[in-house]
Length: 203
Image 1 (cartoon, rainbow, N blue to C red):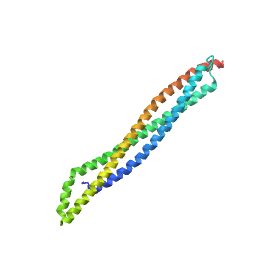
Image 2: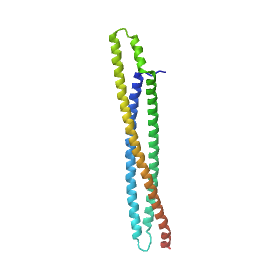
Image 3: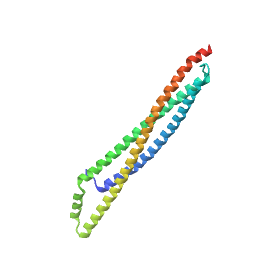
Image 4: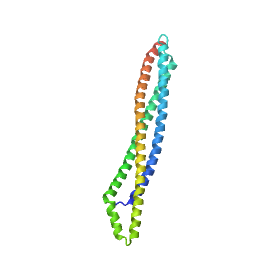
């Protein structure tokens, strides 16, 4: 099945529209990642304060409230880890959809080029009866090609922006995952240290 310039223009416009939708989705993902990052910062500050307080305790005797607080914060950290995984899955889904759209678009452009626009123009000229009609066909083809190039340029720019945002989100998520692992280990270690001391204090 042959692809005409008009068809590729129509598909390119639809692609540009879809890329804009994905651009909006990427902005949303980035905002969510920033929100999670702020929560991680708050948790890290809390853990640092907790470690400080633990070092300052006299006699090494823990407070029940402190142990309970550690457990609560540990659960919250686990919830952040879950949200982080969801964000990573959304980024992967977003990337897959974008790659499918661009693959289809490139395939159609390649098909159009393979048909040879020059031959198409020659065939149209053969059907033309007058020089005026030939000139009109040439102008029409040039306008369509210019329009197609403009849409292709827009699609390429949007694709580049999408790739940049995707890399930024993935980079943030990787940093957050590393931070979360450290915080969970610290919280778990503090909780393990506190529980034996609490049992001794209650006897």
